[in-house]
Length: 428
Ligand code: GDP
Ligand code: IMO
Ligand code: MG
Image 1 (tube, rainbow, N blue to C red):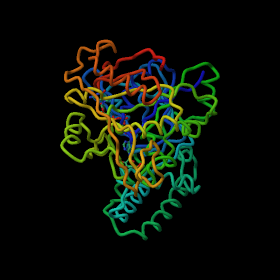
Image 2: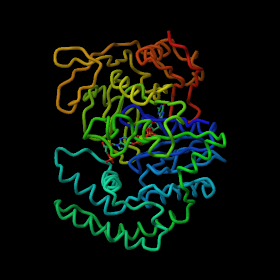
Image 3: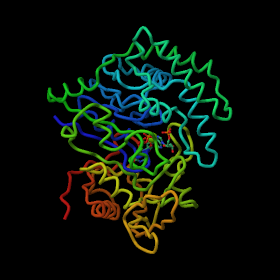
């Protein structure tokens, strides 16, 4: 069986958690392949709300396995909090949550370094979630990192101290920031015991065995393609490959094993943290979307920047990911708009283009907007595509044409059941 992929096509928070949770029932294994506790994936069902950071979003579906893949970076403290949440909700995880031995560990000093290096950047800061993501991936590629498997080795403390000493040396280069290392270390080592007690697997053998046995695997992305370390709005990005290619590295599977690539976009656009955002609405419309959409970070609580949907940006990420089907989320947030805007091109250096410029962080690009009629009513009674107001259907058809990709799901609310699943339509 092939591995299907779900990932975000914008700057994160597209609603990946909700869609993974919905679709998980069709799979035997859900696997996170990159990122770490910078992610915040929200699930809502039966009147409850859960936010997951490290644990895959399939964990609430009985009977299926969930793997934290080798491409993920793990902070044992966050992981323990998530597991406590599962315990409090009587969700069994002991037999269903697996951790790849090759996943890297976020040390307290990685978070310390993240805080110090962001503070030192001053106005140029990225707006990191300060979860230690950048420093941990730097140690991974610098070949200094500690991995989950290492915490079972007899010389773990020695390795930990070597890395910590290196970090303390680096920290001397930065102006001081507030960080209680002693107390953070205490918590970290206490939480490490829980991580040690979980099921560790050689993720690459495990996933490939499942594929060979004909089991169905769903890879869950974190962040969004515009935050990809290679193809995002660098340097305002995260430190991992968030695109489909990251699934191969992050789980240990061959490109030929990738099946459906399900790309998620909001019906508008958001970004949290600094960096270019061509369609940002720094006005009352943006504020209205923020309030209607509850656009505040699931991990940090920061207000998200809001703007209109950006077609050239989505064309770019559909290309990068080989998206085979699209999911549009949060269409209900546009219920009160008489007119909806979509950016269909950019004006840049006197020309109209659909190409994102290399130096997007430095040059002036002006979005060219098309206006579409809104539907001006709630979507409570719309459980099938044909029940949506005609103008909402038209808007979806328009996006489908512009993006040349079938829209197979339309999400109309945060709850699990608020999802319209369509048969893929053939594009004319
Ligand atoms: P993720 O990081 O991609 O999983 O997304 P987040 O959980 O960070 O942010 C998405 C937010 O939108 C969460 O609060 C979800 O509960 C909510 N959400 C998801 N889909 C919909 C939808 O169709 N309509 C509305 N109103 N909210 C949604
Ligand atoms: P989910 O999975 C939205 C952003 C941060 C910052 C930049 C770098 O919930 O969609 P980092 O902590 O990785 O060093 O931050 O990336 N960022 C996210 N934005 N959703 C996320 O995850 C994000 N993870 C990181 O705000 O701008
Ligand atoms: Mg999120």
